[in-house]
Length: 204
Image (tube, rainbow, N blue to C red):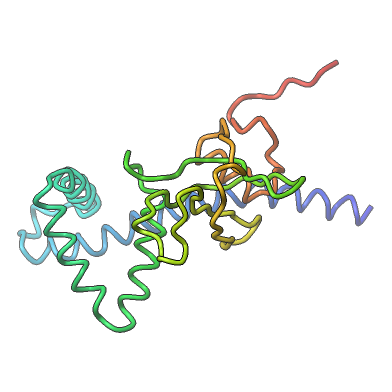
């Protein structure tokens, strides 16, 4: 009986936890944006004009405008110049570069890599993501015209392996990047049906 109760509690926990964490993350982002932007707005606007939520609204507008500006070549060049200065600062450059590379990996830009592939290692096949195909951007000892740099994620943890893999050992995968990352990080528990919004009909 105790085992059944424990299993039921775990089932309920694993059902609720993803929803709670998602809501909390969104809540934290909204509250943080409201706190930062709201404080700045209250300093420049009369109190009678300001209303709760204005900070979040202005923050979203600012983010949208920055996204539009980054489409301009001149703005990208100025931003790149600023980043080159940050990359020269001790400690800061290490932390910033790591965070920048992580966000660039998931950034929805057309020129990003993010190509999902199946890597063949002997009799084994592993889901991977091509991270670099431009040989000029690889270390000199890694430059090989017949190979590309592939990231192999590890399940249930933030980590993985970056390997130089010959093109002959790579074949395309039909999964999108989001589907493949979810599939790999959950060790395939999600299964083939990755659309969790569709109701599953039990066979009689």
